[in-house]
Amino acid sequence: MKHRKEPPGDKNIIGTRVVALRKAKKMKQKEFLARLQTVGLDISPTSLSRLEGQYRLVQDYEVVAIAKALDVSVRELLGEASE
Image 1: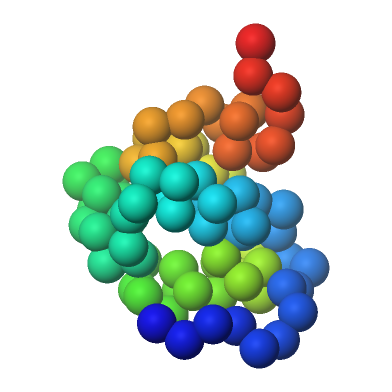
Image 2: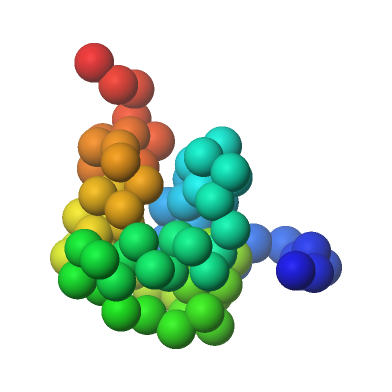
């Protein structure tokens, strides 16, 4: 996978958190996409890449599914301190 050459966008606040959490769990994008499908969210590799780069808006139901797929709370995904 090539590294991003452009600075992050401004379409969402979770993109960088998704990347950090996914990499902390040593999960490649392909594996993450498969996990998203198991929780009912089917998005394309391009769409995930745009989400992670903060170039794509994220729907509320997607935030919930992404948190489930990463096994974190929605609060943690949003960058709020865990309790």
